[in-house]
Amino acid sequence: MIKETLDGIREKALEAIAQAADPDKLNEIRVSVLGKKGELTGILKSMKDVAPEDRPKVGQLVNDTRAEIEAMLDERKQKFEAALLNARLAGEVIDVTLPAKRMNVGHRHPNTIALEELENIFIGMGYEVVEGPEIEKDYYNFEALNIPADHPAKDEQDTFYIHGDLLLRTQTSSAQVHEMEKGRLPIKMISPGRVFRADEVDATHSPSFHQVEGLVIDKGITFADLKGTLDEFSRKLFGEGTKTKFRPHHFPFTEPSAEMDVSCFKCGGKGCRFCKGSGWIEILGCGMVHPHVLEMSGIDPNEYTGFAFGVGLERIALLKYEIDDMRLLYENDSRFLAQF
Image (cartoon, rainbow, N blue to C red; front, side, top):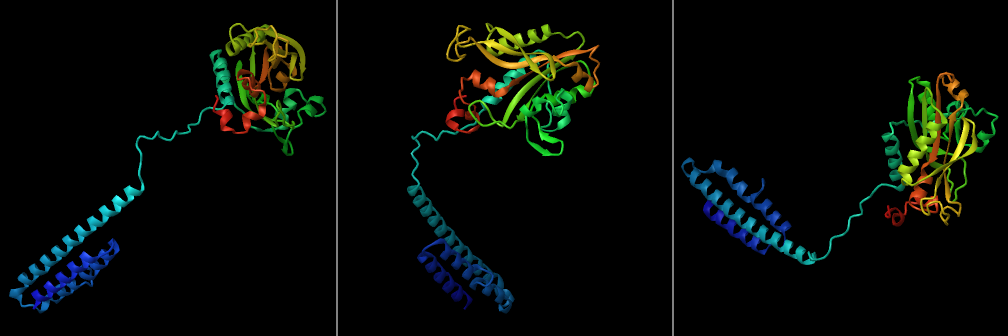
């Protein structure tokens, strides 16, 4: 009786498997026949009603039936998977002879390239790179640099105040004051970083830009040391044939002060469109550190002297790569940036 029942279950299951239209239908058959509440499971549960001597034989028949149905299910499932894979491959034809898509790999910004070049030059001369906070106290940004509240230079550098005496720094010289206050002499440092001023945006101005300022303080430092340092810097940056010219100027935190020009590296000083026919290009401001600045930072000006200089990083990038509009550096146009 049980054998006939098992034969019926097997034939019914094999026929259903053969007629199944998709994998979901196969799963339904598996559950209805082999699941916890399936037909074969029901027969196993009724084994208690079978005579003890017949139970091994009946158990063997049930296992054989289960194995045959499972084999048929697996075979049918593999056929469905193969058919689905073939259909997918037919719909997703890949021509391996086509060129691969080019990956857009990023690279360094012109400002970053220029900054690394400047840093390497000064590190090679024994300078330390020191960074300072972009949010600064009014004292470090102005007062400690010999720019009191009523000084005209403060109006020229009118900046963005945050609260009370906190502001966005207008120059990285504030980092130099912090370093001088530590009292660790001598000092030989450059301080690169972003600064902020209330400037109108045009081809040569921006309310946010970058500076690299240098400071040297030691015994016996003279203006000749300043000129020699900047001569070497200019030759390393613009070429060995570069000449320098110093013009008198005024900065509140240096005395004497000067603007430095370099000979045009395009025409060799003969005069061209790049240097506007003068043969010279203005690069930076510099001078000997004002004795009062030294005193405010706790340094004896009778024992120590020093020089300072500051250069706009964007100006160096514009000159080096012959860019005529500073705004191009910040528009994130990949067509422009990809040239560097």
